[in-house]
Image (cartoon, rainbow, N blue to C red; front, side, top):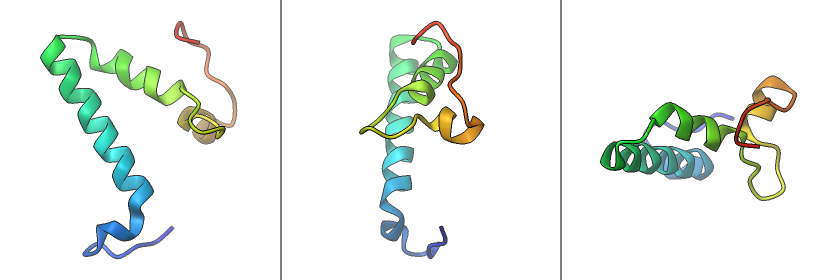
Length: 67
């Protein structure tokens, strides 16, 4: 997908994901939690009946302690 660098609203799905990850990392810093565990949990979570980000990247489910 290609979008204009000067018009980020045209790529809303990616912008929303960046906003979510920034919020997640900020919360981890405030609560002194492990940000790597939070990102792993985010990456293996299925969203809106779509494959998880890690499934899309790797083509298979990732074995972890969260699922």
